[in-house]
Length: 83
Image (cartoon, rainbow, N blue to C red):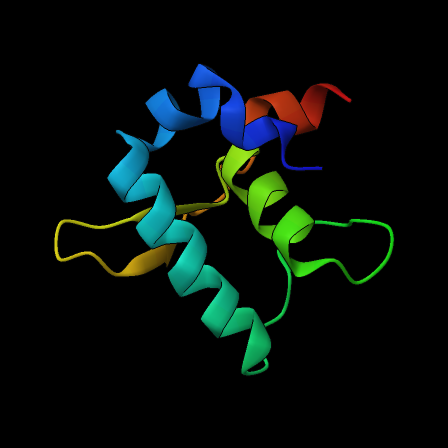
């Protein structure tokens, strides 16, 4: 489960080990106090939820060190019309 933390990909995605640790801790607090998960993960393992949110670019630390959700891009209008 925690193999993702050993990978350099997740460390680099967040901007370093300190930022990764901070992001995980702050998001875990949010989930523990009632925040809704942003990804579908089997079970209720909050650590796995946080790691998946990071890997899917759903959350990040802003410049003040607060956890933020990334806004998901909607398909372009012409792409939606072609379907």
